[in-house]
Amino acid sequence: MSVKPLHITFSLTILILLLIGCSPKQVEQAYGVLERDRVVLTATANEIITSLPVARGSHVKEGQVLVQLGTLQQNAKLARAKAESAKAEAFLLKLVNGERREDIAFAQAQLRHAQVNLIESKKKYQRVLGLIEESLTSYAQKDTAQAQRDAAQADYHSSKEKLDKLISGERPEVIKQAQASLEAADAEVTLQQSILDDLTVVATRGGILDSLPFNVGERVPQNAIVAVIQADSVPYARVYIPENKRVGLNVGDVRMLSINGADSSIEGRIRWIASEPAFTPYYTLSESSRSRLMYLAEFSLPESASALPSGIAVKVSL
Image (cartoon, one colour):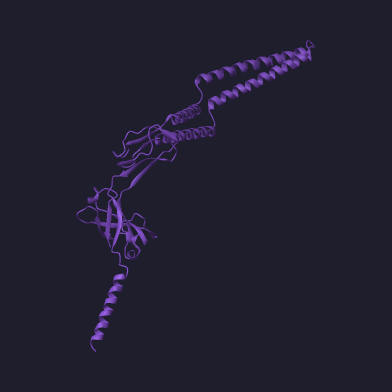
């Protein structure tokens, strides 16, 4: 009678072990790859590529020319902007410095000539009035002399105003307007120069020239990618964290990372974790986790990992 309870106990134990074996295992590792910053350089204008001085795969330094676009049209625009700036500057100098001494002397001579004509026309008019009183001339002569006198007086006043303007110079409002025109012209020169400089695509960071999508002689559309640099920097690990391991992980936490092909593990510090989960992509390294929700995270690596290539698989112990 004592064998039956022992048989039942043994059967229950086997059943519990089977249930435990069939339950999903807790994922204790996360998978990902090593990556580096990629610098994407684009074309600022619809121009033809005239030169590719660096071969793809070469190491480039910051400021090194990678792609040269055509500059013929932009050089013409810049030359026109510089001409307008020079014109505005000359006009402003003319207003500020005043008229030349030769112009002032000429205006003074015109004023003296107008003054002599006015005196002569006044004397002539007085003589005609005397002849009218003695009935020695007609009233038509008087009207003619009076008209000549009035014209000489108007010419005198006009010459005097012209001379006064040359001596006193332009009004402050006119000078300010000329200054504003010069500033606008200079700003246009700066803008056109910047557009010209952007036609020479240079490396903004040092690294490996990873891609040159276009060839010499091809016309590239504006904003098209013309060069891609894999930056010289310590790689970082992009890892997919399982949903059940997300709680308890925070930015700044340290975990051990195993690099595929490396002899030893290295420390990685979490620098960013996605705020929303997503399904892992089809190329994830763990087949069992492809259908699960994951949080994408980035781990910073120490300087000792600077020689590791990008794209290498990495495994993080959670």
